[in-house]
Length: 302
Image (cartoon, rainbow, N blue to C red; front, side, top):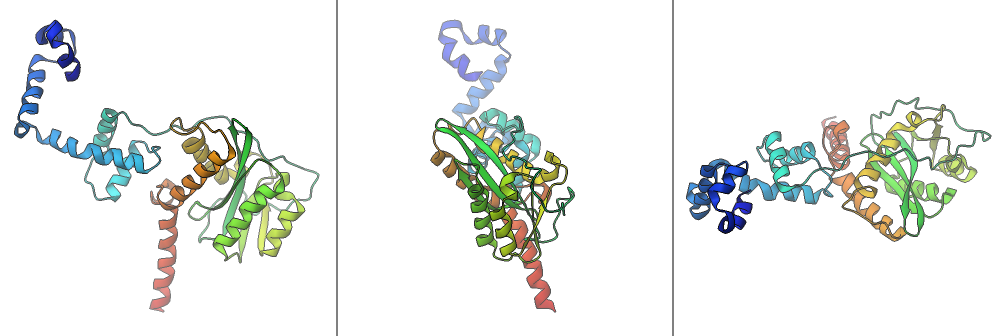
């Protein structure tokens, strides 16, 4: 508003414009007075001027997807003493906001009821007391200029860490098998581990079942066949689609390479820096570290 008055004051005059605009003449002159003499700037204005770059930095460093609540929590983690309403006010002034979830469900796994399938060992209870106790797996899709590509994720339920992923042009078994291989290589400890998926033919294939058995992983498959049977994996897919694929600041998705690089970047951020509310508004890697630190402390005390 001040800038608008400055730009047109020679043509229309300051006081006539202030009468027509939602700004008092005294407010305009007070602002200009502070501009000419910074010592007259209010404490609130000084604090806002220092906080704005920090809010912008936090937003930029977190994929430009955080809304007010996440920016506020991250700033508190960094030691800033700031109210949530202040973050909201300054984000509005900066013209930045978080991404909004939405979009229709897309079915990428093809159910095959003719195949024998393992029992449902999870029964929609997606909880784990330790890492490598329960993994969930699912597939989503991305439309690119060169055709559809598919993304498979394997998620450790304990901290919601993404332990395996793969981008492919094909929905064949290799897609999910490669994601599984990455998870097994990354985690190594697969004793007493359950792998849960929906009833997609990719997950029920002989090759996939054999690889689970070879690694000593017990297979579990949803019994009903709706999204609730694999709700946690669906949630991670939803975050991925919102924060990467449908994010208006990303894309357009021209090729599979574009999707693969963006997914790599997002997974690294998600595991190591993204704040997740279900685990106490800390990143998955930090939550897992707390678990192993407690185990080490208990062993030292014994």
